[in-house]
Amino acid sequence: MLSVSILVAFVLLSAILQVTSPSTIHPAGILLVYVLFYVLALGAFTFFLVGASSVLVGIGVARERLGITKAYYFASVLALAPVILLAMKSIGRLAIYEILLIIIFECIAIIYVSRRY
Image 1 (spheres, helix red, strand yellow):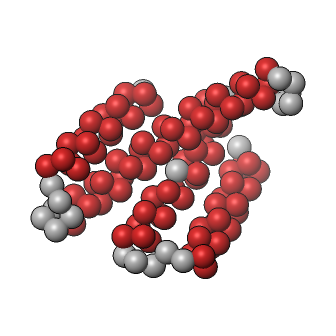
Image 2 (cartoon, helix red, strand yellow; image 1 turned 180 degrees about the vertical axis):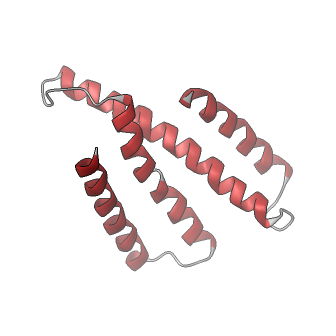
């Protein structure tokens, strides 16, 4: 299911970026771009975490493999960072202070997810 949603998000995002420009798109379209970018990042982070977990188990660094569900939970938090960075850059407010705040937010969210699940 995740693979299909990534593929659909990629196709839709490619179509939107080819057909429209930022000055001609409706605000709902801009929101759709951010949502599709989040879905792409979510899929990429999920598969990266599962793959990295398998490699770490294979070389003996970790004891057990990270399941797809737990990787999805962590990826849902991690995928928000690029979207926030892109949104901050689009409004011209991306400096070291904002980046540090996003990193702190991500660390707190990862700690929450690790304690919760």
